[in-house]
Amino acid sequence: MWENEHLIDLKKICKEYDGVKVLKDIDLYIRKKEFVTLLGPSGCGKTTTLRIIGGFETPTSGELLFEGKEISHIPPYKRRVNTVFQKYALFPHLNVFDNIAFGLKLKKLPKSEIARKVDAMLDLVNLQGYGKRHVDALSGGQQQRVAIARSLVNEPEVLLLDEPLGALDLKLRKEMQLELKDMQQRLGITFLYVTHDQEEALTMSDTIVVMRDGNILQIGDPKRIYDEPANAFVADFIGESNILKGTMVRDELVEFAGSRFPCVDFGFGENAPVDVVIRPEDIMLVGEDVGQIVGTIKSVLFKGVHYEMMIDTGAYTFKVHSTSMQPQGSRVGLNIVPFNMHIMKPMEV
View 1 (cartoon, rainbow, N blue to C red):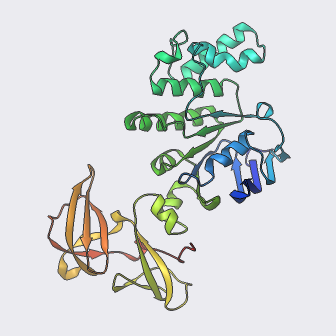
View 2 (view 1 turned 90 degrees about the horizontal axis):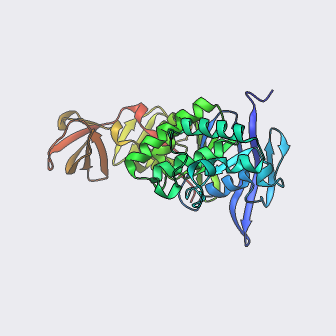
View 3 (view 1 turned 45 degrees about the horizontal axis):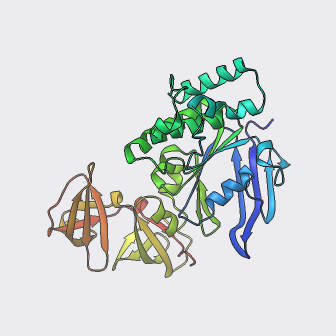
């Protein structure tokens, strides 16, 4: 019945601490087998949202539904969810096997069943043969795998992950991103993931929820969030952007950086203030004589797969990503095709 319906619903969820609202009328639903990421800067409310779903916090107001049933006052151990924390919270006096088996032993399962389930989890997280090792002897990435195995062995309907890769180095973090996504797809369970790292969100998620100051600013799949940001904050937070103040002269004509450009947007009225977002990779370098605008290259950085150039047009300094390098001090033309401008109403502060 619930296969294609909502597994978790948050309806008008508010949370206050000492009279300060940290969540403001949050409306969000999560479907079965979905990988959902709560993304935003520190203090935006993403971890509080996760803790409310996990049962570690109670909402000040609003409804929290699991398969249509209110669960706000059900304790964590009675919910069909498990949580993996950034600090892993492993038991240092227990070996890997006993850490993973801890929840199963509380349920008083037969030893043979516990051994079978733990061995299956060790296979899943690529730690075969590590059962007798002490957790203090493991690397950060291995400890993280143990924490995930300990949560998954109880067969939760939802796995909550609170910045679980934050303590890992960059290379290991990228490897674990792919492993987590693969694990989620193989298990077919719902993952709710908290991070402030936009690359993690774009890499792993089916759905991204962008948060700021206790509000949800945008919900969508990674491509939509990146290509069609709802406002300047989302555009700036998800990837790199040139964000300019502009004027919508009329439908399909916008003015910014001292020039007018054809665009595909309409419905803003005439001479209306707008924010214009242009990704660095969406600006084409051309000759001075054919550019919509002309500028001077102030700096050039090699970034591995492309060059990053800062180009001063007098009215604005554009960040441009290109696979072809032009030397510092060169005069170049810049062209921006209509589909590569993202125009939106100015964000209310």
